[in-house]
Image (cartoon, rainbow, N blue to C red):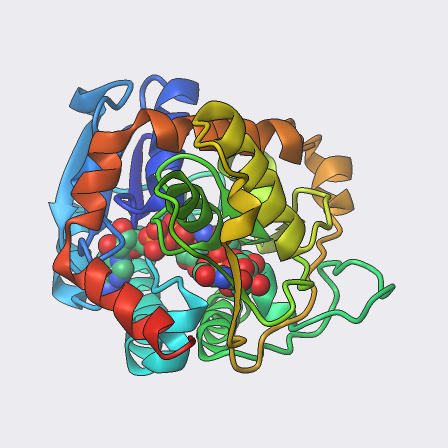
Length: 356
Ligand code: NAD
Ligand code: DAU
């Protein structure tokens, strides 16, 4: 790796990944292509380990001519593709942008990358790589007691978001199969940690609890997610880039199975401890109208990446939630810069008003 194109690097996971990559690879230059949609922010890129090895390019992955230029001008050898519309609730209220970014955008990026790779003699995966970031949601939903998902499980997406991610995954695999285009792919579970946009469950609950606002729990709150600390995720992606075989895929999960309600309880107790207000925050919980088509349970079997690449998550959920809560309480400027956006405020009204 020398010149790495990261798409979506101003978002939550992409920005954490750029930090990780700069620390682990002191010679790599990162070219960060990001459209700065509502969830992308240059605030996430403040204080990078080495700003001189990071170039920000404001642009859209759907712009093929721009992607062609970036690949050629900077002699890119590795692409790590995070850019996406990532919020399930937004996909339910407006699926069109998910089709555009996640399917058309991934296709546009792939097609530019394929032409560039072919023009450079069709380098092998040691010298050129397209790494695609996907999600566990492509596998659908699990019943209680069903085993965690392995890489062999057939896709069964259930929301417009997961269907768009599944389509993108199929396109990536089809390029590998048809053109021998060098790719790797990872499906990960719910990430949490610093810099997550505060419309996702964990940061939303931390910030609402801090401000003594209602804590919205969809349906009965007994849905189950598999929570992965973003740093563990970034370490896993790095290992895949360094060690995984061409055209392989890996599942990455945190190895825990809490209900949403238990996550909310834990956060309430942490905020009570770190910022006492006299009354327990658990009293702020409000059960609201459920997400349509809400997946009940996710669980990832990460044994392949552990066995083959030696990856194991290092953050327990207890410690990870504590550190994450501390991070949000310790970064009021980041929080207010993000939440001042008109778009964020109108989303809160749109998503929660009609749930009451
Ligand atoms: P995010 O919403 O925080 O960030 C997405 C980034 O992509 C933003 O910076 C945004 O500006 C950029 N972007 C959006 N459309 C673009 C376009 N057309 N061109 C260029 N840039 C564009 O998302 P995230 O949580 O960091 O997720 C990153 C990736 O990981 C996504 O592909 C998502 O599907 C996947 N993923 C996320 C999670 C999770 O829990 N957050 C879990 C599994 C997989
Ligand atoms: O599983 C991986 C996926 O995790 C990623 O692919 C997505 O990009 C990411 O957004 C995330 O999707 P979820 O829908 O699971 O995350 P979210 O934080 O939106 O919701 C987590 C759970 O909490 C889910 O069961 C819905 C519930 N929830 C969410 C919000 C925002 C609530 O009960 N109340 C809320 O206000």
